[in-house]
Image (cartoon, rainbow over all chains, first blue to last red; front, side, top):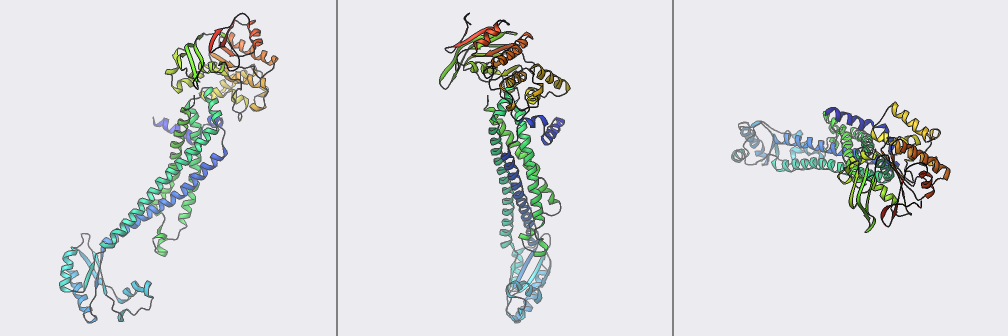
Length: 302
Length: 225
């Protein structure tokens, strides 16, 4: 059973010299198949890269933001230091809080720098004091903490990031789904294009098919000649498109140098293996599409 | 070999053949004649399963053609050699490959087949033209190549549709001799032709039944031939 399949795969990839000679090559369908397979694989590499990158982003945001919270203390300047100390005391005695620390003026200035520039006089402005909270694995009871803070440091407002973490993560997850959906659409488009090209080739070779039937060729033999040809073309075109796509992705700026989301588009580590699967997948799509088209056409002939 | 029982064939609302019963027995030689458009080609196509009867029964080697799957019909055609008037070659392949086409599609390979092919090409006098492409052949050469292709699988039956339609008398005679030779080897032969001279020439050399299609029916032709 396995041996038979391996033999069929070898014949599929290497061809059957006799059968392949029988069906004359048709120029424009060959070029159409090669081009569409290459273009679609190029796009598939980007869709895959986007899907994997947004997946990583969703995981990172989920992981990082889930374990951090921010305390914002807004109080008159003469009470600010006292309320900050009180809030830190409360946090240090709260189960689920691993550590808490007030951000320094330099750190607060760095946070505001993108909007106000580097020379912002933080100390002279009524800017709230920020306290960074790192949670333990188990996390803390946010409602209980808010109650205690309202008593000890009335100017403190706890932001556990839930409010904006959720839409960000769901946006990243939606982007990831969109990437996978794009890949499915690309596979469907490849199948449609190859079906059209195979139908055109079958129509152009109607006389050849008629002669082959006349001399006793079975449908599987005739279909095989077309299926092999289109599978090989899809594999070759797709390999070229995937290599170009991988090269283009590799040349994108690195995330660590620019730090934005878009520059993080790409493959990391073992993820480079995924685009290698695109050409065999395209070949499989071509095999199924051409086989179905050939069998349908042959069934209509006497 | 091939039996037709009350066979009718209709196309486009009109009946082309009606109530035909006939048996092509092993080793027999038949001519099928009639005016152009009488249904000779349709009759031959019914005999090798390229058309299905709209009524009655066609039996190929004992099996009802309606019960045969597409693969069965393909296998059956390896036992029935067909020579078309227009020959039906693959124009991108050399003559030798066209002649060997039934072997190629049947998966035969090897030296014995190559030897058979050489002998066959020699038998039809086309050894020197083996590498030529079909469009480069004359009418007579094309018909002989088509005959070689029809018999390369050593079929039990050879059906020839107007095999001498486009060739001169001398070449017709040569082709006829090849078909008579095949018949003497035990093959069943049926030639559809409107060339009465060819039929007369054959009847002096071989025991042949002459059938005529007239008014949608096949009848045994009279002694006027």
